[in-house]
Image (cartoon, rainbow, N blue to C red; front, top):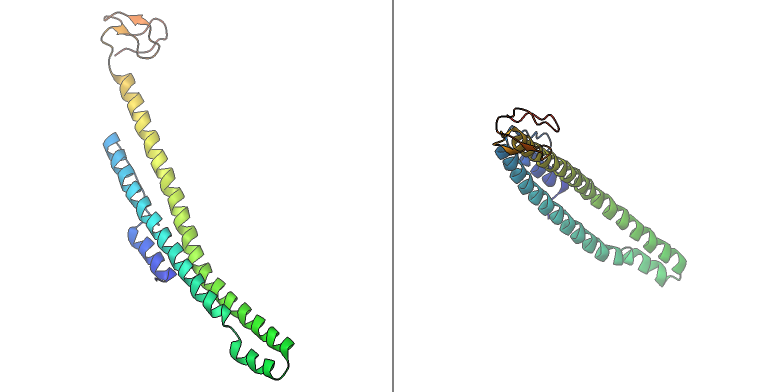
Length: 172
């Protein structure tokens, strides 16, 4: 079981907190998408590890809460002060539960950080996919027409035409 600080350090070591991604070509954009997918896998693994640690903490504190206040409360029960014994047990259980919740809260904050990073990586991935689609569309429009049809509207054009007679698109 690792501490929340260790998880934060692992996130820092991954370099995601201040990462910037830039691509000038389709190949670079695909490489960025691949790197982002790997980072997403690592982030999801960290999140699974955090969930396991929280589960272990809950299990450990469940045992503690079950036995909380047994010794002191037992003495009061012997002397006929059952109401006070119950109150002592309840206070001890509340104390153990507060301690557990404080410990889990630190893990939950790290988990929220991981979720935020996952959302950011999804945005980067979507941006790169949009960039690729735009680059492909520009490349398709930039290819010169070899006669036959206009790439924009599909109208029939001659090889000697520089512009489409229907839509005015430059044929290259």
